Image 1 (cartoon, rainbow, N blue to C red):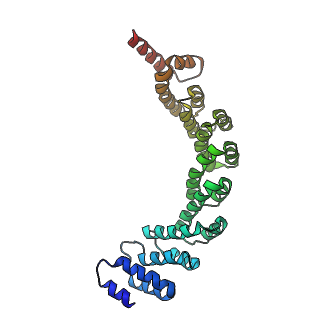
Image 2 (cartoon, helix red, strand yellow):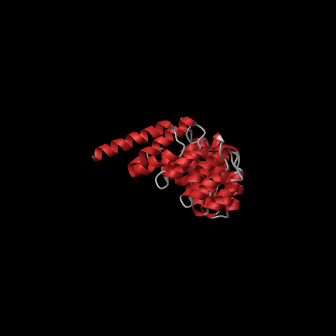
Length: 285
């Protein structure tokens, strides 16, 4: 306490006081924590840096105490730093033990942030387990984990990823469909198309159709065009067809016009293609 009082009278000694507190907390945690709570006032709703430094020390020696202090921190950069300290220590433990720790957090925001960290760690090593874990999370955390999980899983094990996606429903399925189609198509466009075709005529999958068409547009414009015509929102479909046409006419104008002459497409797209072809021919004369 004498050291803290001395340092408190010297400007610029903030980090030194943190060091003293952290050492004191390891020797006599109750007194150190009481002192920290009594002698620091948060400003502007900020965090509590005294407690953060203690949490760093407790993370590897007294996880229960570190967790208790973490739950007392207000939402702040300090709270995030404290969580990172604990998660860094927990990364050395069995992932099931980490999941149990996350479930016991009382602060919903902290629990969601910790869950995303665990899920992203799992996504790299065990995507099936990551997917099961995601289903236990709140909607926003689940959405973020699906964002991280879907594409790498589909690239490494497309059939397995598609089988998982088929077990989903509602918004979760719609969200995953947007990601999984292009990722699977990177290896097997036909497999991606077969999977998405089961949702034909469902407007909720229009974005998934659009994303798949965008992915296919360069290497397989015919297949991309077919997916654009399946978009139930006619305005969206016509807009996407014009985007596709602009690139297609540069690479293969004759092929684009020939395809449009033999397949359904918005009239505005067909007229534009013919006009562009005439302009290209005229410029070569």
